[in-house]
Amino acid sequence: MKPFDYIQAPSITDACIAAAEHSPAKFLAGGTDLLIELRRGNGNYPRSVVDISFLHELRGIEATPDGLIRIGPLTTHSELSSSALLRKNASFLSSAASTIGSPQIRNRGTVGGNVMNSAACADTVPPLIALGASVTLQSVEGRRTITLSDFFIGPYKNIARGDELLTSISFSPLPSVCRSSFVKLGRRNALSISRLSVAAVLGYDRDGRIADARIVPGSAFPVWRRAREAEQMLLGEEPSDKLFTAAGKRVSEAMVSYTGRRWSTEYKEAVITILVRRALEMCGRG
Image (cartoon, rainbow, N blue to C red):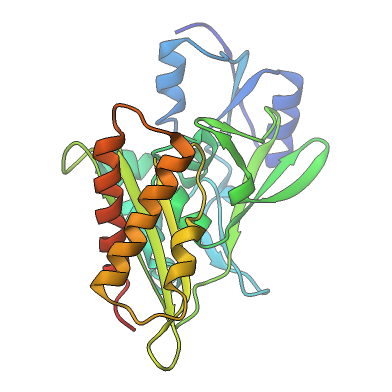
């Protein structure tokens, strides 16, 4: 591990000042990704590490007065998975968090770290994009809020500057007519990094037809995106195995059109079709 300056920030403002004055800097939250990166010593190695893990104002899950749900970036995966507020209003986000790593990693790793690390296999990102979540970034120059679907530009890349600190994640609760699900496939049943995943939401009208459809695959596209090609074919239809399978095939076709064919495509084509079908089936039949 190369040497770096360690700075413990007593406030959000101090953290932003430290990151600006000691650039290039990295923010330390749970450290489950950053410490591995520092040990490898490659890439954009920081001059300083700004420890924000003691900032209690960056923790917690709450309903805001304007009807949103706000999550602090230092909220751990364990806290996401056990939150009664999320289980009621965004249950698939809790489900996704519960699949990450081991209990030790879930107790230490944070949702903010999962977002900012921007790995294609990040399990909390597909549900957050399906929820239409936004992130707020803060620096010495001020704050800005960005829709999460516009935040990522590539694997391990996002539009945040090095001196910008993620201070909140917010989204609207799912309507009561909606049901959600998250499924993933890894190389093993535990401590597994997602090879492919799917977050799905289905909402129904009074006749039991699909009125709202959201499908967000993980590790399938160069950057996360809703599979609107498949979503559109679901709207106005009655749920069925045939329909859900066709939607899965549509996602598979979209994946290939974006990524082209490579050594893993034959495997991923079949798997993403099945995962989408399963995710939609888990959303119920209205």
